[in-house]
Image 1 (cartoon, rainbow, N blue to C red):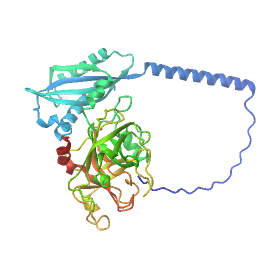
Image 2 (cartoon, one colour):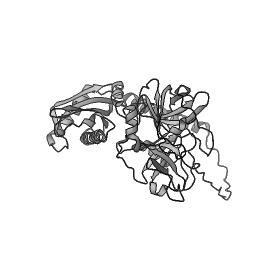
Image 3 (cartoon, rainbow, N blue to C red):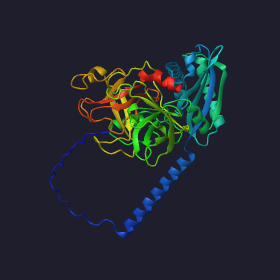
Length: 438
């Protein structure tokens, strides 16, 4: 990504002369001062030790219950569907309302992991996360959570009708919690097994931070030709499938010549896999950049963790309005025709309407319905060489991340009126599903 440098001129200030002060540190005062500092340090260490030993700890629970005032839909079985997403958000929002009012600020987050059919409605399975003092008992916290929930059920002002006898709560460890959440896409977790909120990235990007931190973009992959190194980016959409740009494989489609790596550095990688299969869109046209989309299948599935995770694919009906903030990541050069970067970089850009992008002074009609423009009309921030095939993502207001674009083409990097052009993922949902079942 290319960031336009800002030049600062050095101001001239008048020279100020300071008088030398009389020596203050005689031996007695120095000894007293040293004792005071030692006492303060001792107290500080005691306080820190107390809070480390007695600090908060994460507690996880699997909640299951029946909701009787909604009917099961077949698309609930597909966790990337709009139906599953909307219903999950409704349930998670309800849980947040229940616990944020009554759990003394100890509630962190909830995630629906499954919606199952029931003759009287829908069975809900979800993970609840809390932070309590480390000395707390999981069983005691469980009783407290049940009490809060049962009190809320009595008020009868919840949007969903929960069948009280069906409610069960089971304490689970961080490994089981992680396994449950692996069934969901687009969730970023810290190494501490706490969710990473979207604002932790967006605020830093607005203030110009460029390099990514561990686990920030866990779906980012580097596609590398054996012997030639990094060629393109890609996005993990399942434990075996990567989504990327077709033009990445224009010169070499032999899967045995490619590897994929994960992590915030190319060298060393956190995870490395060989590529088993490459599928290019049948109607990819190199001259016009139309249908610039491809799939790469890994020979061995990756294990999901805070470092490697899949991104969500959006519903085909999703439309992002102009000026929506979206985020592009990659290992590409930071100046036009510059070298690949070993560290993963990131940038915030904005959606630009196709009408604006097709103006004569911009791309003069070259942007087709299967493409999406993002960047800034004044230039300054853009994807660049080596970012091709990488993700353009956006977070919904529940901290779930969706892949909306694939870095495809553009004139040079970060030029005024020449924003980045991305493959519009929503236009290819049926194609992706036909090849992968996702």
